[in-house]
Length: 478
Image 1 (cartoon, one colour):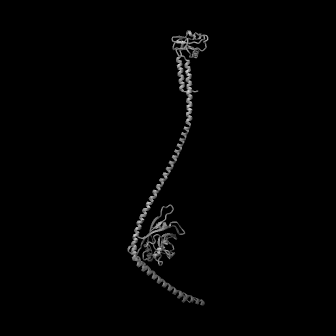
Image 2 (cartoon, one colour; image 1 turned 135 degrees about the horizontal axis):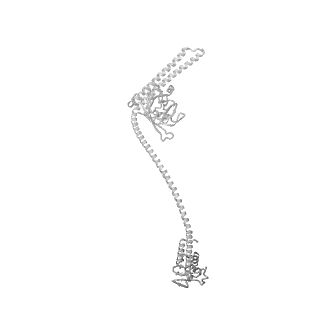
Image 3 (cartoon, helix red, strand yellow; image 1 turned 135 degrees about the vertical axis):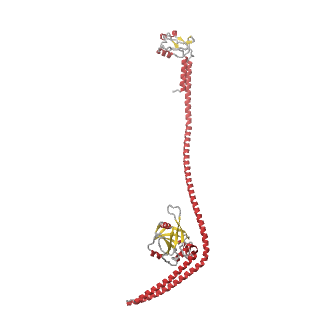
């Protein structure tokens, strides 16, 4: 068994105490060898072995001492106790000296009890330590479980913190997005407010013009009645001449059938037929020309009466178009563009200009569309406002007006092939001018904003039909 540091110190202190209690003896080696220990030993207290004593004798003396009860001789306050053996028997045997020390047998028994007590105390401490360990195991397990639970809770709290941070970042992003949308809505609201003020201003202008139109309607009705009367008269004359020509034609057919048998055509008959046909054409063209000229003169008077005061009687006039181009891929909202049309002088195309200016004045083209891009032309029609044109009796011109006003790139005119109110804008120089004049009447050209026309012409189209129609928001005189 390994003793502690306290036990070692205790034993060392006891050994020192025992050595201090032993008498020290001074004797010579000859007396010790001869066995005359009792005679030659001089006892002192304390006494010590001399340096001359042989080492073997010193070991024998030290090894032969033991502690016992003191009996016998006392000299100078010291006692020598000898066993019952004779001096001869003591040679090489155990013998006992006793000096001033107390009896040592009792001291030995106390040391044994002390060691036993220390042993019992050690066993008790060991048992107590084992009991503490056994008792602390569940507590340690509980502590470990609590620590593990604490660590798990820490991990959960960290995960919840990360989730909260992500939610906060997402909420912040949504907040920024809502702020951006709010700014856009505010911008749109301001634009709507501006358009509302503009609409209110236009409404006031319209009210004033409507008041002015009340006075003009009587004159317009008279003009329409006069035009209708002249058209009726022209039709009656045309029918009469057609009947005469048909009669002449039948007469010619009879003469031709009569000449078939003769196999010789009379040159005089041919000349007569040609003369009659030529005369009919001349008479018809004269009457038609007179009627057209009268309509043109009346159109000039109407233009001077309606627009001469504000814009001049002879032109040219300028009309500004406000259009909206739908957004393309990657765009945010429709874009608004402007272009300006300058008309021909009134004396060039009076009837076409009169119809077109009245359409602009009554805002009939507002809200119409540009759906077609075909043959290097953009076509704007009024399919969605046909009834408004019909109510105003401004669906088309009375006749195809012709003049030397050129039909070139960016020129504008009426298109009269499908019976609908429709205008065209050339996007390039038209090569076949004669064929163009057969169906179109150019009465103006794009004066400003030709890049807008090019932009509309570059929009994607399929079979001449624009994939997204361009809207005419407004057309007005400037």
